[in-house]
Length: 162
Image (cartoon, rainbow, N blue to C red; front, side):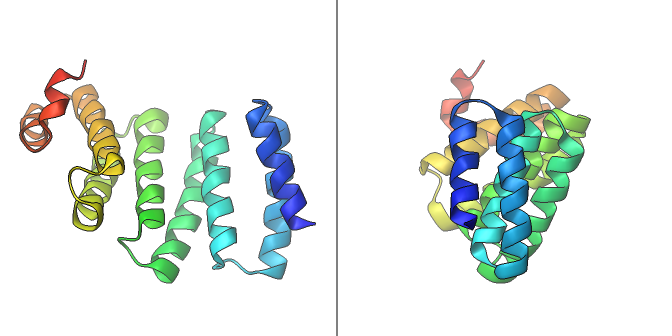
């Protein structure tokens, strides 16, 4: 039953019917919390995905609530540098950047994600480069030229970014 609710949510995401996807994901979350608990990996993944839906709907406050819950559980269950944990850290950075325009908070989370990805995946990994690019655009929006220079020295491909 819970997998069916989740799968229906995925279908509606594919159809870009985010409100309906949200309905199914919320129902699935209630079930997973009862059956699996807050710290189960599937529950944590669903919380992260719910955050993505809320962010897509521009409800960044609710997105951050979901991401923070997912982050707390993922850090506890998987550790602070696990790729799934770092994915949630980056999602939090994006929510701060796009939602409240709190570039200081966004930068704090981008730096944390980038340090973890460099350590775990290396600087040439596509996820690390994606994080560096997101960080670059945040720094550009905030006007942090000193950090932009440092970042482009580590990631020369960013020099060609718009």
